[in-house]
Length: 396
Image (tube, rainbow, N blue to C red; front, side):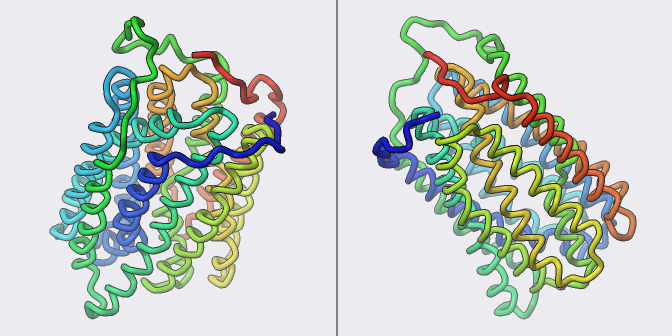
């Protein structure tokens, strides 16, 4: 536990620039995300199982890309990897607008997630480079808050354009390229310092030996939870099944992201003062309440409460988990640790999205209830594990 009375170091320039990069990229992505389930199922006529397949393949692709890019981030400069990843994602967005069948959507989402996987671990490693364990939660929380602010602006901007363009969905995929391109330009303001690998220490290209036992225990538990943490696109499909149209889905998704953005920074600060394990476990309990609620309700009015509750879960776990992972390995292995973590959770998301899509049926009740119960089990295991999963400072 850190000294809560100690003065807090200011956030570095790189962290602020990377936060701005993520804000504009997420503005672009989230212009599209709330409408993607409607576009795939209504405009293109694909069934929910295809939506689950698309999102599962997308997340699985990001997972494999993260493993590779995370290791590369520990072997060479990180900024070029970040720039390449954001560029691929920017180009992929207009491709969906060209689709008249779901296979092109699948390809575009595949390309977009390749970019996401390529940029994520190197970017997070750059953030970790500019922090210590005493400030890391705060830095990741700030980055997550900025990223998610884009998820507030994006759907609102998309909704405004949807109305201005005569309620046509397809043009939105082309407009989304503009903020995505801006995010790519900002990357070149990042200043990358010397690589954290100690001078003279050779790196084994494919080695995972630098990852500690504490790291593997944490990642194993989070990976088990990932097997039921299916794509948010299916939650938005649940909202349409309960009676929301394009406007309602967009607004409830914005409300989720407002909650996520507002609480991410405070959650990160709290995780710097107490065990990140406890903060994450509380997040899983909130996840369970939100999912079980979404599975049981039959009135769409409840969604105005349950989606913000789900935003609380994401705020308590997203940035906190990245800081937690970075705490448990030497600085020279942070990229690898974040990449493997992202890869395993992404593979879990692939499995979760596919099985949930196949089991969705008419209401999605069964996968939602199953996911909620499993989350409670994992939260209990985390709390019972105690110091074995606690944060610790690892020497370089």
